[in-house]
Length: 120
Image (cartoon, rainbow, N blue to C red; front, side):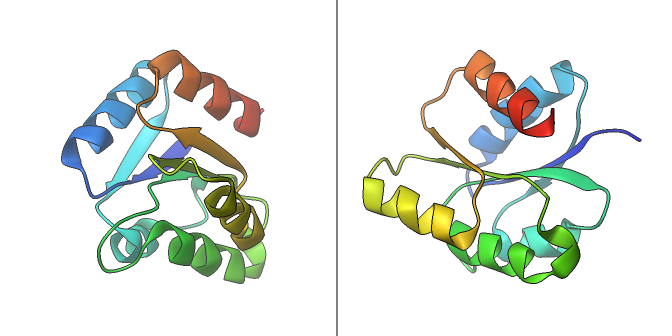
């Protein structure tokens, strides 16, 4: 089974950079522009979600909570990729069920290291 990663960001350039980095490393990538779009593209084949926090329609925290609400989704890693570096926001993310946190701007090798760590 291929390793499908769902990337969620309202910035097309961020989605493009994350997608490019992951595809070059052998991952299959689905892209979504906000939390609502992500939920429509999320299914049992998704192995990892990488999401921004601040997005229109449904933000990253609401997305994390929505994914975690599904009993079969408890083990799916969710990494937050955001400009938010405040400890309070990180704690809020962890409480919602986020697995990891990457601060933008990020280096491609940093992203891949986190992806490999959470996917095993």
